[in-house]
Length: 104
Image 1: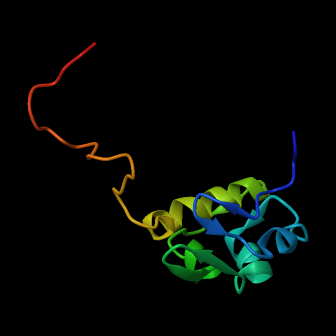
Image 2 (image 1 turned 90 degrees about the vertical axis):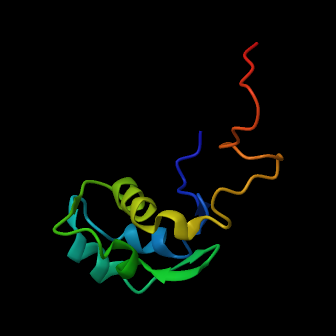
């Protein structure tokens, strides 16, 4: 099993975020993380955003590890990383209520 962090996950391209986070001593404050890699750009399906902007909603956050920083990014970016919300290429919709429900 590889311990190398993903370059792209859940619709987010991290660029050099991982390299910059290697220089951070954890636990670390949000301010420390932003100081170290706040100017790194995250490429999303809907555009791009800086790490600083992505983490802006978090107030006074402490991160125990790089994984917690990435989790914070995933949580704060939300649907911006999704190409077409509620889209499926499998036909129909998950919310379809046409006709009676059949159970097998």
